[in-house]
Length: 181
Image 1 (cartoon, rainbow, N blue to C red):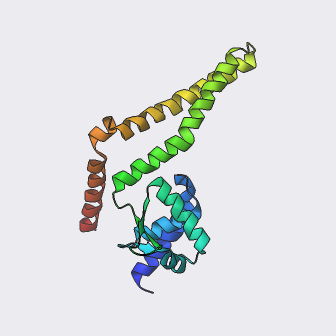
Image 2: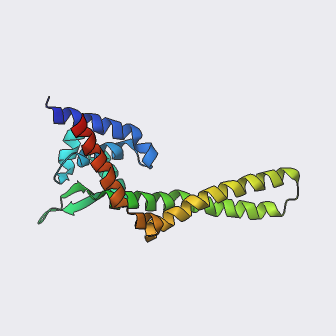
Image 3: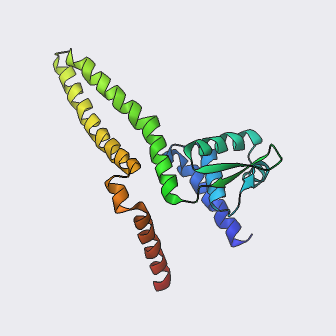
């Protein structure tokens, strides 16, 4: 087996195991990693064969990744067939992940924390006071993360620091590490 095939398979397995961290399923993690390792768009049939997944599993994983903005679906001209390619712009991919996680997780969590805090205001018991204080602490922490995410998504301070610059710095450090090894 060629080195690229071995690395591609290892990357795919790793992303399948780590996918929950990014809020996606293991099949989506595997599909994303495979597309990341390819330079061209791949059809569902090619992905099915490469990943040993059913058509339904490929379709569901691809739909999840397209919804997150991590994969781009392309219609083959003159056909109903579609092909998929990875979003190669790392900054855009990170923005898409943050936007989706914020919408799906942080926004509902903050809404519930605020509602529960308001409901506990009416309860004057010691237990309610403790829970209200703990919920307020959680709300403050999540609110801070949420405002940082908003700032990043709207082009605030994190944007001004430049995610592209940070990525470029990481890449140049990686290249320096290769030359000194």
